[in-house]
Length: 399
Ligand code: FAD
Image 1 (tube, rainbow, N blue to C red):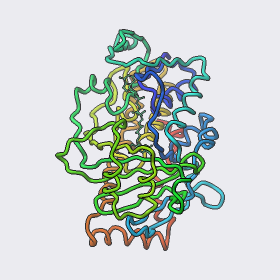
Image 2: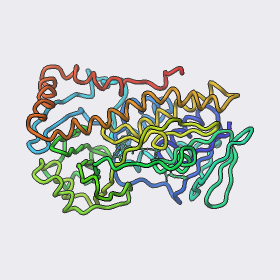
Image 3: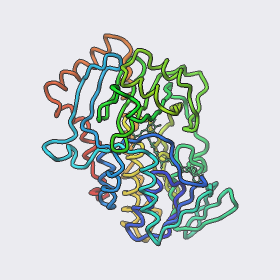
Image 4: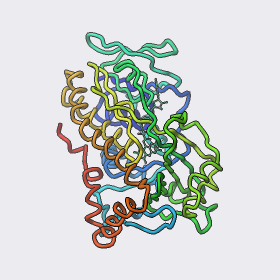
């Protein structure tokens, strides 16, 4: 089949690789004149790594990543550890595939290099998809540079501000979730004694939390901090927005020095307003399907948005193979088999905000004491709550 993909982010490039692996022809249309990602890290969990293992890219991704030793939770101010779940049992990964932390630019580069090795792949940069039209035997796409493309199937991997979703469902009305996110990356050599451990660590506190981890084989420390903000203050949903260091430090005043030293030493700080969108009623329109953030944007409190896009990519390619003569049916099958899992991740992400941000001593004790006891007595039992997420193997889904 001839497959058009709008967007060369993690979702679009993964879709291209999954479709190319099954022998399809792929054209990716990307609005930016060059592929770039913001200077920040991303968690690459086992459920996504299973797909890359099947695509033969697991080794390449590991080469650029940091491999954390454990998932941990700490109190933001005292640093007191609530639990530690080791990511290896014996010498094997707990969830049977590696858990990695990678710089977004490295992630995109690995995927891009793999795509460009295929002779059946084309990437058109500076090409912004504006609309689509379903035809009797295909789909046609118009771009803002007046170019038109025809294909058998169009995949909208054009992110949270998706033009294709707007055409399919009308303008959505995202509402500010009441949280803003700070992002920062600092070289470890600048942090002295305050280098965060090589773990995925959530630091919890009143109305805010932070996540720290290492990148690039441990050379960089990554920070994501989420802070509750006035709901009626205007916010921007864009990574290009930079924030004031003094404001970030004020948001985490009195917090553990492993958290604040990254903010003090990062060359740049980015600030992003987190918006919620109501789940969509449908992800497909005949030969057009939404994927990744275009289909199921989620709050980042489970670090799963991109991982779900990677799972989507595998499922979409598999469904096209199941219904080679009926692309519209294939896309419906893809959407039906993904909706429940993605909705659960969306719901759980919103719930985590409440868990991480407990506001008073009583609710903190009720929430965190069982975590601490569980972490001391039975970390494996605590780990089981993540099984549905990390043990899931989309490459074995026969839907
Ligand atoms: P995008 O990455 O947004 O890519 C869309 C692409 O489409 C872009 O290249 C864009 O330029 C292009 N495009 C847009 N419009 C058009 C158009 N009209 N025509 C052509 N091209 C177009 N997820 C994780 O799995 N792990 C994490 O640790 C994690 N941490 C996060 C932390 C924060 C603070 C946030 C906000 C999110 C986090 N996420 C994480 C979520 C993750 O970043 C997203 O879910 C993921 O990047 C979505 O990928 P995508 O390919 O669907 O969209």
